Length: 94
Length: 169
Image (cartoon, rainbow over all chains, first blue to last red; front, side):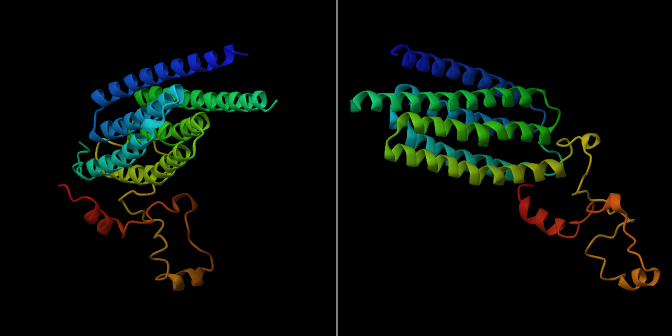
């Protein structure tokens, strides 16, 4: 019965590694995106995956001091992406 | 007697939370692959909603099941609610800009384009249908082309919205 928490911790570590891998794929799209809107979407997804990583890290360590950071980043990410979307130039999409 | 049942409950909650986190991480991974391989902005937006909404909600539920103290759970509920409110706003703005811009949307992949700027002459749309009520009563049948319904419905409101939305020229 004592091996199950260790197994759960190992699964959480593996899922954090997978989150880092998917964040790398998103960074590839962020650098390669042909239009500015592609980069904007990639940046949104990157912020969302960062939030996911913070929550998963808090679940792994049981340390709840990152939870207010998660609230703040979710609001700031929304403001940033909406503001950038307003400045995308009309007609070119860049 | 009460201690082992409590630890069993905690173990079950930890297990359910870990399963939710793993599901959310798998959704994030699938969405990243889709973000790399899908062809244009609108389909990449379709891929991007997975970690933004579903994946983040699953991971937040998993984290709340792991942490299990009242302020943390309420803050994670707040994160989920914020994400549910703000993700459609960003998606709306980005989709509208992508439709209006040149390189954002591949028109050959669209089945229906409800926001097209070219008015369809076969169907005047609901705004103009009050004008030709007499013509429709004379021949007795509504002359409506079924395939083109809804194609150019919102053409008239498009200019005013666009003027307020695109201030960054």
